[in-house]
Image (cartoon, helix red, strand yellow):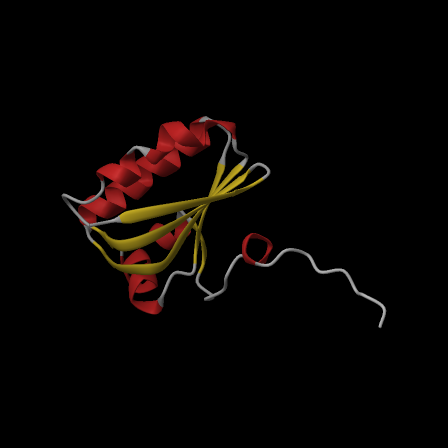
Length: 118
């Protein structure tokens, strides 16, 4: 089952996906589009996604169209090499903004630290 964990910082919504984006498990992702109405950027963190099939790619494309229609930027982050290869084969790497480097969005995990005098 695909799980979605949402984090928000100001006008940026980060959705950490966990599981497989495949036929029969995409309903939760399909329902995300209407929720992203008051954000300026939507980031999908795919670090815990193991598989994407053709149906899942279609859902991602629909989500992209919904966000673009609302003026929201969509970015895929932490795309592992096997998933990135799927995007390459389908040439969707030219459609989506993809950051394939495995990184955590630091401002969501670590608050900004201020230097403290000893």
